[in-house]
Structure formats: structure tokens, C-alpha cells
Length: 306
Ligand code: CP
Image: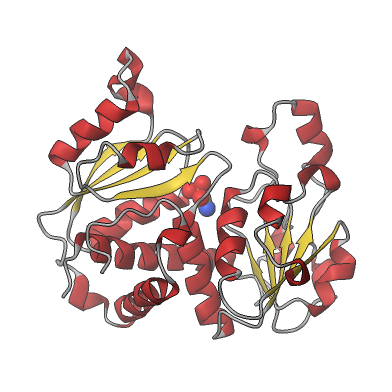
């Protein structure tokens, strides 16, 4: 039963509960007309303390497509935060008005913290610093479900900023819960997966390399990611690493015909625009699946479907 629950990290939901969300997303995709007013009279609070295109717009579109309404901000300086209000007081107040809240914040642990002040209003973590981004993971898994027809027994290359990439942390932890998935972590040594994170995985479930061209040939999925400029303390270090990997058509020619290229977006330079027209590039489809899976998530947490 997902009604009234929070989603702070993907591990909050069992595999069965994740599958329930994907099944509902499938139904929403197939029969959109059935869902146009199931959230009538409900309000989603959209609280973005950090920039976003996909996550914010997909959540807001999801709620509007379900017949609900949206309040919130994409710039906290327009709220009483600018007068010194604590985030706990903000959430307590929002919980007086809204039925469900989505929050993105640059500080790790904020979604968890505010869930203690939400008075039963479900809290969805839309990204907390370099920590977790669970609804991106729902998006990623729904994409794989459609594009690869399975969530297990996959060889998954994860490339780019594995140190700061919250989408990657949530994605790898979750794919590791499905049987027989193998990971190839592709990064410069400065941006490798954190040690404490690797310790969560069986030793035989992953290899690390810095060589994308060499690793690409036997992957089922290549998950590219942006170097997270906003998490660097040293701009010169960012400039040195930002173009370490650029997926070009030439490099993609080394991959299997049925490999898929994913990316949570936004992209900077790490995938050349020439790759966009390759049928293996699914990252804009991925963004679309994000809206459907968030429709399913909102409906489940609000308990508006029997
Ligand atoms: N994937 C993702 O989180 O994108 P936004 O930062 O645009 O929300």
C-alpha cells in the first residue's frame, strides 16, 4: 500500500511496489482518457530550491494531466525563506494547503528532514544535493522496461560523473536489486563511484575503467551523465574534466545494434548532437516516460485509485 508514503530514496519501496507503479504507468500510457480527473480537488506543492527543467515540469504536467492543481516556487527567494524562515516551518505551512509535495534542494538529506515536519503529507524527493534522485530512477526503469523488455540480466555501462551524480547513485542501487545485472563504471579517477557506495555492491557485480571506447562493445545500456559543475569547489578542475567523455557517432559505431543510450539530461557536451538521430538514443523518450511514471506515483501516494 503506497497511500500516504514518502519517497525519499528508491529503497523506500519494495520491488513489488516499484512494479505496481510501472504497471500503473503502463495503463496510463495505454488509456490516458481514464485518468484525466482522478486527482480533481487535490493540490501538489512543487518546491524547487535548485534549478530543474524535466523534474519540475514533468511533476507539474503529471498533476495537471490527472486533473489536480499545482502551487509552489522554482525560486525560493520568492518565498519567506528569504526572510529567514526555516525549511521545517515552510513544510509545516505547505502541509496546511497541499495534499502532496515534491522538493528539490541542494543539501543532502533535506527531503528526509522535511518529511519529519510534513504532518502526513507525502514528500517526494526530487533530488537532494549529490545524494539521491529516486523519481529519475523510476523514469530510468520505466524506460528500460519499454526499450529492453526486462530489468534484469543486463550489462550496464555508467559513464561520466559517478562521484556527484545523484541520478547514478539511485539508478545503480536500484538496478542492483534486480537479478544478474552487471555494471561497468566508466569515469576519470577523480570522478569515480564513492567507496562507500561500491561497498554496497557485490564485488563480482562491477568493474571500473576510464576507457569508454573499449567498454562500449558489449553493453546493453550506456547511461551517460553530465559532469556536475554545481558540485565542484574548484572551477579549474571542472573545466579540466568536463569534456573527458564525448559520445560521438564514431564511438557509438562500436556498440551493439540493440544497445540503448540513456541520459537523465540536461546534457552539456557529453553526447554529440549527431547521436540524437541514432535509434539507440532514447534520452528524450526517457524524459517523456518521466511524466507518465510521475502520474502513476502521484496517484499511488494520494491513494486516488482503488
Ligand atoms: N533529470 C533531471 O533531474 O533533470 P532536471 O534537472 O532538468 O530536473
